[in-house]
Length: 183
Length: 184
Image 1 (cartoon, each protein chain N blue to C red):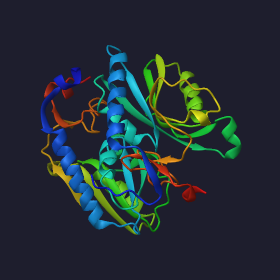
Image 2 (cartoon, rainbow over the protein chains, first blue to last red):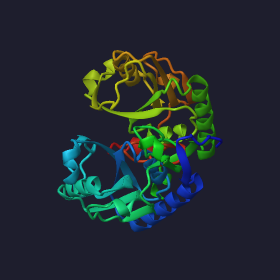
Image 3 (cartoon, each protein chain N blue to C red):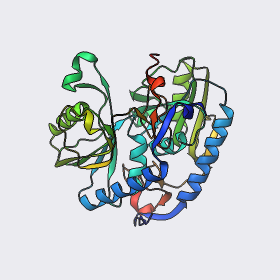
Image 4 (cartoon, rainbow over the protein chains, first blue to last red):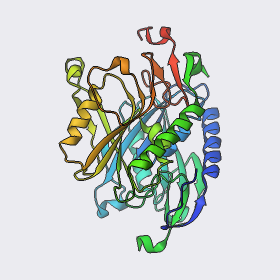
């Protein structure tokens, strides 16, 4: 792939090969852990998780369903509670099923914490989280991560689903955005 | 893997899919440039895997957005009218829209979505579909880019499902008849 690197990108943090290899490892681990279990449903959080979901799902060797949810935040005041507006819920019920929430990035943790609490209230058979990127320095609330792709420093990253104002989301690698772009 | 036992044959291999998706990406690159800033509209759930691979090949500035629709039921099928469960986040007025579909079958749903989006005043609208089953077409819908024309067989994989199964197969396969005839 000869896709040129946009000027707004300071450097490539995780290249395509590194991400592909790690996603395969995660898929192998998840496949082993859920072997013999029925009714696995992967719930991806739009828009960011769609690329990770596409690559993870096709490497799983266990039968599973794929579902998506879409969220929007209320406003800045709601950040501290993590309350988000569910603008599209899962297509099917998660009650009694093995739920794996698939997220592109874990930052403060508020959104994922809210999702975990929301799904737990629906009495799934089990509930785990799979996160591609975690920024531990940014964490404000503790959220359990069962499967983690990469821990990264507190920099503004884009690509592989991650955006800046909807830009750079589909870069096949994860890059660090230049400071002057967002400041 | 039990799912593979239900597949009668591989219709389009992973390598062939990837090569064709790259070609479609190049075709999209020919049409749009940075100033067009096209909005790729993905109709969930089927097209998410194709979208993920297609966008890897795009060189111009673009954005992605999602729609999810569901059928109202048998009575509305001939009109193609579907219920919009998730609408686009973006206003498409004045935007160049590229609808990304996994498969065009009867064409009715796509026709309705196209008409629905057209009322919003996009600058242009095109359709890129991975698969097309021309023998099933009931209404003419213009397709600007088609990955593969496929015969009227029950295809699954690469986003396409049967009762939510098989969506994650990395290739397009034909489902065994006894699987979808079992009347579960």
